[in-house]
View 1 (spheres, one colour):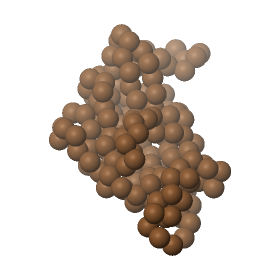
View 2 (view 1 turned 90 degrees about the horizontal axis):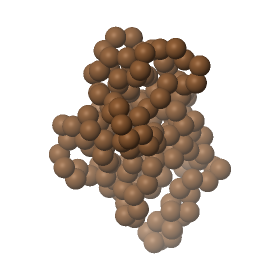
View 3 (view 1 turned 90 degrees about the vertical axis):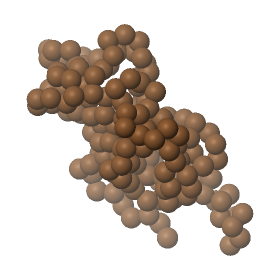
View 4 (view 1 turned 180 degrees about the vertical axis):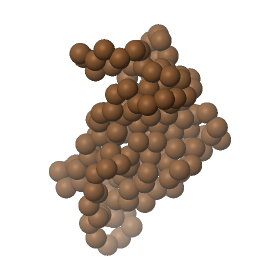
Length: 166
């Protein structure tokens, strides 16, 4: 298969039923800043995509969330260089245990990912904003489009992930 046909096949397989196994990332919400103390709420968030202050789930009587950590696995739909974005204050994104966006990252850092492989991912907001602020796990894919990483490409850390198709 030519390289051009292979790239076209990769682009067509970004979020199809064949790879839509993702359920989201494990979210741990803390009442203290900097992830201090025990997580008050632990759940799976399908995507990291919040506009405004992060709220506790309905019916929860915990103190206001002050920090949050999302963790799990991210699957690259295409091979190539990705740029992750951390636009909220006090936010950082780690891929394969390396800070790639936000606090502590080199500006504009690119991460080489292989199609179909799963990489450990962690998104930390050490101090949640109290006013409207976008908190999103976004990347710019190798083809240049910037978007929120979809549920189909995210898995919590406790979930068994199937091997990529050969």
